[in-house]
Amino acid sequence: MTAAPDSPLAARFVPSPNFGERRIGRPNCLILHYTGMPTGEAALDWLTDPASEVSSHYFVWEDGRIDQLVAEGARAWHAGKALWKGESDLNSASIGVEIVNPGHDGGSPPFPDRQIAATIALARDCLSRWNIPPERVLAHSDVAPGRKRDPGEAFPWRRLWEGGAGHWVEPAPISGEALFRHDEEGPPVRALQAMLALYGYGLELTGVYDRRTRAVIEAFQRHFRPERADGEADASTVATLKALIEGLAK
Image 1 (tube, rainbow, N blue to C red):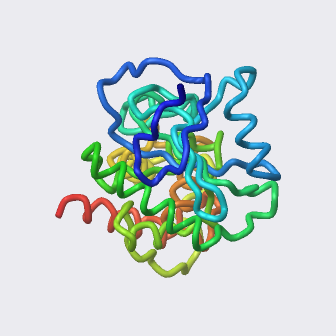
Image 2 (image 1 turned 30 degrees about the vertical axis):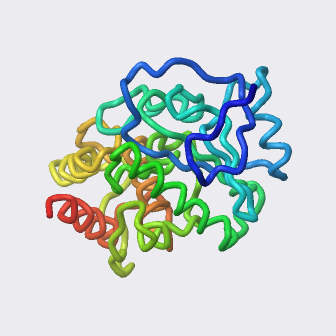
């Protein structure tokens, strides 16, 4: 007998065999993905195939329909090797939502309005039932910088925030050049790394503007300064990061 969906917004439960037991008592964040495949049907087949060893809790179609694949109380396999605020088992700590979109390799087409409306409603429902703070609605790229790009800079993060899910400030205008050269060292680089780590990104305070730091900056830009996601820390990026941190303190 197929289980009933946890969310009243899900139309059906399409069970995936790819799950396990949560190693953390309850989810404390929501991680958004794009499917990154040519069709939703192909993505759903993959997420429910035992050979794939991947899954998510929810699956949002282009027309706004929502399927549930794994019970919220179970550990879906969607985040992989990831880190946020010191937590490395993000599969245990999160609810994963796959959003049908071919992604960067498919030309980054716009996410349909009905799909985004459904994603906002689902996010608000999950946040409410699990008491998850809105700033813990994260991108896969936030928790796996350099390894993952989804759901990408084409995803309408501001609309998500306006709908009551997520954290956002108006990005500072882009002006000027990058503040640091590649592999530049010094206290200003360490201070930037410290701010990124304070917000939640997994980043060691090396004091070197190295490849890992640039990957984290690019992930940050994809989410919070999507106009230009190039991995270069310019004044706009730093000002936007500072404003986000100040917003959490209010």
